[in-house]
Length: 474
Ligand SMILES: Nc1ncnc2c1ncn2[C@@H]1O[C@H](COP(=O)(O)OP(=O)(O)OP(=O)(O)O)[C@@H](O)[C@H]1O
Image (cartoon, rainbow, N blue to C red; front, side):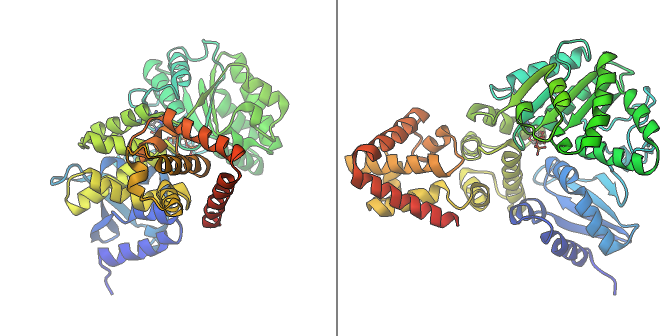
């Protein structure tokens, strides 16, 4: 029986559903529409350029696997990217599956028919004149929004990119939590070095990949060529060094390469999900080298920086979002930048598919589904509802300007619980209580703590509410 694009894609979705979480499935796969099936090529429609890039970045292996399952080893996937509501840019990008794109951030030269220059380690050519690079060209300083959260790291990155190996920031170690922009920043440095210094061999590699290559080299008896390859790098970017933890032999090899490059004035840039002092399972001699240059951290962007990130993304995607929606999203998603982007994409996808404008109502609806997953079970809504019921006060009153004593106390309790049980920042909590500022939240938290100390009955009430929170979390 000849299969249609819909049945092939439905089967793909069944497979994907079992491989990714609910939220990811809803955000990244539900909005996709199968367009056509031409022999071994399935064309799918995605809502935006960014959406396409995100799939490429995060789900290329999964897509490859399900297309292979459905269409056999020669199966191909093509994307059709909606450029704005109405016009469609067909087949600007195509993916040939399988066995392509070995690297997390490869460029898409292959899709345009160029051959990837591959050395025994599936890495870029050692030929310094080769234009091939495994850096993602979309990561630049231009689209890396600056804020207090990343100012030091960003300026150090620019200084390093302008004079690789020459500044005292060698190595440059960037650390920060999940989705806060480490990969973006280190790749932006790599891209700038490549642009500015022709013939500088810039190599981006994750520490996982380095480890696998090294293990393969041991198995294949090719340690010498492995080492030779790395010793020729001018700017080495090594992502997520925490994965070296506990891998003694790999650490030794990296130590050797590190020393050689450093002594020869080559630049080393590293990223990690935690500060060097908190890296467990790494040899002291390696750790002490990590601290030779500059260590700079990335924090969660503050509200204004989140607004700027949203606006920049929208601008580059050519999409308009009203100011109140930008503000609402920036206030509501304060976990990490990747999640912020996920929500944005989801919103655009909803608007595109439903052929509606993006407005506050739609943003709230979209976020309702997602925030539930992002926040854990206990979210601001749940706390407001529970506290409201407990004190017999409506949620509207909690958000309102009313200064009646019993309402003020209930509001302060709810704010206190939000601080205890959610990841929201003080600013964001204030926003959810009728747009109050963060100092009001600090005052609320302090007042509740003080009252708990002096008023036993009040303390018991808080304990009871806390029990409700904990029960909900189980
Ligand atoms: N300051 C910023 N300006 C613009 N975009 C940003 C910024 N920070 C992060 N991003 C975007 O957020 C997303 C996640 O960033 P990235 O992948 O670099 O995070 P990471 O810290 O490396 O995450 P992980 O720990 O999971 O590897 C990317 O799409 C990146 O472009």
